[in-house]
Image 1 (spheres, rainbow, N blue to C red):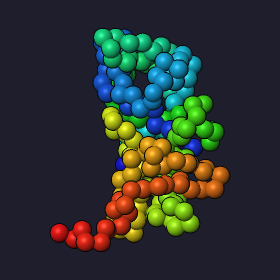
Image 2 (cartoon, rainbow, N blue to C red; image 1 turned 135 degrees about the vertical axis):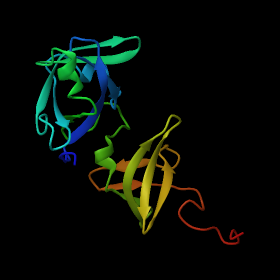
Image 3 (cartoon, one colour; image 1 turned 180 degrees about the vertical axis):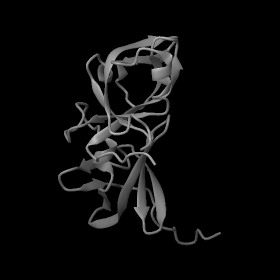
Image 4 (spheres, rainbow, N blue to C red; image 1 turned 120 degrees about the vertical axis):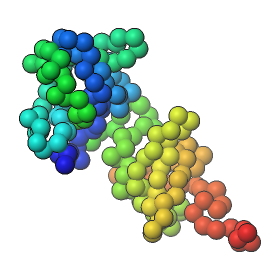
Length: 184
């Protein structure tokens, strides 16, 4: 079983495989700023199975670079391929404060999950997760036993009110309810 991660942490990468003989590792990235996130000296909490010797450990970046368009990382204390292979499949987490990203109209997923989805005074449901697709992000809203996929675009989601604990929506007809006469 993998170790649980606190809510105030963000997943930023996953180790894919060892690369070469000197402890390098290829990464799968879950951040849009890898060059800023994986700077020398940056530390990450490892999510690994409980039986791993890396369980509940942190690890520090020694070097990060791009090789053939693939992100490759070196960690302090990992100096050979055998040590590197012991980290394969580890998920990298970073402590994250609750402030918003510096971009306007940008939020971290953990800030949105659990907020009420509202239309006017009506609570439609609750944000269960955010799915990131190539064309746009989707807010997945739990409505009873079902989930509704809402495009996270300003025409449908004009406002995110973090302090009020809600996401204001103007969904098109039929997104959250059946349209009369459309039962066929």
